[in-house]
Image 1 (cartoon, rainbow, N blue to C red):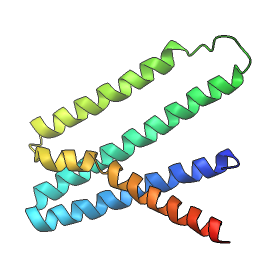
Image 2 (tube, rainbow, N blue to C red; image 1 turned 135 degrees about the horizontal axis):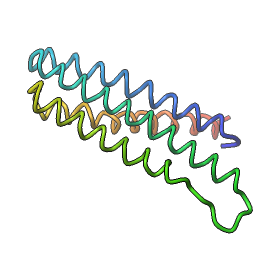
Image 3 (cartoon, helix red, strand yellow; image 1 turned 90 degrees about the horizontal axis):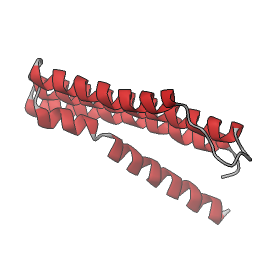
Length: 138
């Protein structure tokens, strides 16, 4: 890959895939196991998308810091960057707890929604392999 724009496009496609697959999974769960399962899957997928989005922003910030400090013997990452990473995880844990404890949505449905990133990555991998195969054939 020649420049950062290709990486950014992959990240955008992953965000879209997480949203689309989350919607499909939620509809499938709702049809197959009922409204609460569909809602649990949708909520889990929404948290998965939010986590990916925040992680993407945090990684971009750390990369910018590294590039700004290029040539420096020791790169300094502000404590606020570490705090944001930990707060992100804490917020997700609190959200999952609230969903399971107060809304009483099925835990397996929420976990399936949270794991929707895995098929999204596999779809992206297949897309990149197919695209790379096309590049080699031309």
